[in-house]
Image (cartoon, rainbow, N blue to C red; front, side):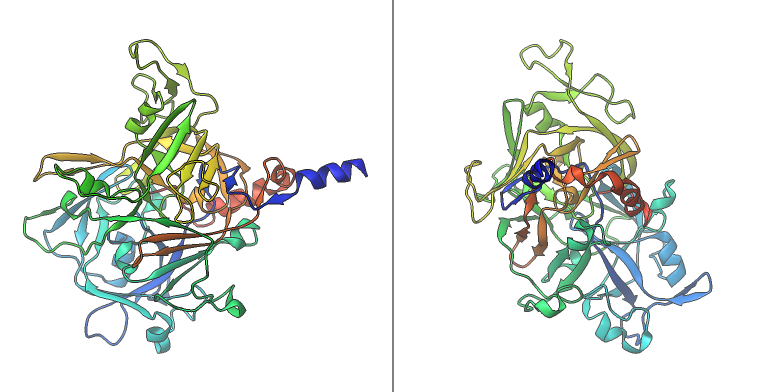
Length: 465
């Protein structure tokens, strides 16, 4: 009876705003179903792959992508044309890549993942969210070396313009399946009877204000003046970094993300990136916490982080405890970055305040972040902009520890019942679930490592941004 009582004490849950146990890699990322259609055509672009006729595209729904990316493989199968001699340059988490520019197409997205897909008879009702005509990126060119990136299709912010994204991580949290993602028109009512298949827009308990940054001027097209892919703005937790980088930045009161480590504090604007399975801070943000890469170790598998003395930066540093390394891939290829655990990472909610200690803010205790610079260059202004950080899906859904390719234990289950991105109102909605106290979930994870590995690899996914 004493043992049972002890287990019950440690297994208690609390509706606390402090979130424990987040690990460095999300177990899933949002995915939607879509199709392409030439303007004026009555049917979608359809191809044959392995003898099967199909027009459906399964794509990542990525707030970190300013455009729509159709892989070379998908474009070939569907017969999507590109503009001859036109090359478009774009930047991602691992650097810059070149892409083709597609013909004009309409993009249609199914508002739920449980629809009757690939049925030509009803595609206009099933894929009821329509965008365009617009041009997509196609590629990258040349084809990526990593086979998992060959067929990577990404629906970025152009398909979220004027919409509300609803993510349901509950099936992922209890390991019964992957998370469900929906795309709705604003003011779509919540329907509890269809909470697991077509819920509508749920009410959320906490709300984070976002800014929306336009990165068009950091892209290039060759030849100059050629048609370019359609872009839309990206959401940031914090002031718009593009406008703040100008000579006379406007007032932007969007609350930033706060971070703390080893007695040091910093804050910044973090990209809300549903296409990133992990999270980053820049080398400049890390330096404000007295953390840096050991000499010449950034970007290699043996890269190590150290704590340094800013009063004597030439002196050797002290290795950061409990650090890890992770290979990340996406636009620009792949790279290896080192990471560590912050003491905390704080989201200032509309229910809370700019006071980090406000009990209505959301605080991630022991928050894992990689250290890596995501930078874009404006050739007209000769300006390099490095974003402060990336807030990835590992903070929003169930997570897993990965170190140098080795999969470890599950972290805490996802902290939210629902996650919403309301693009028209520039708001991240979070419905806080009961959060297990530290240690209680670890009683349950011993038998879950194999299942976690399966979920991690089931779509051949790469950690990306």
